[in-house]
Length: 129
Image (cartoon, rainbow, N blue to C red):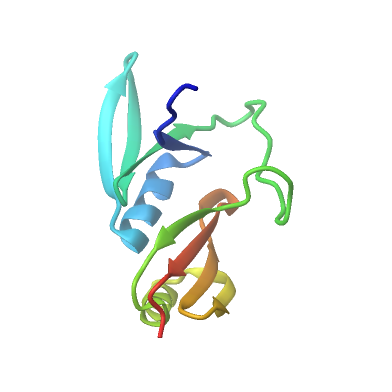
């Protein structure tokens, strides 16, 4: 059987700069700028993962984000320590949470927030008291 390894997340955004700024401000993502095919490109490094941001031009045939819940890719998760303090910090920065910190089993707490273009992001604390 072939070996599969994780490579990247790919986002589409009508405003890649604003999307990148959100991930930088909220999660400390590193913004990576380059030029490919003569066009500016903006990507991120978030928690060791590559996040590619493709611009969506006005009038393109790209559909709007789905309304959650929906079938297919539901969310991506970021592991944190001290989830309650992290949530409070992100709320102070203006993040909208769709699920407050909740203990799903002993020692594990999760919360969900809404990112740009409706992306659902889970915060996961596997060392919760």
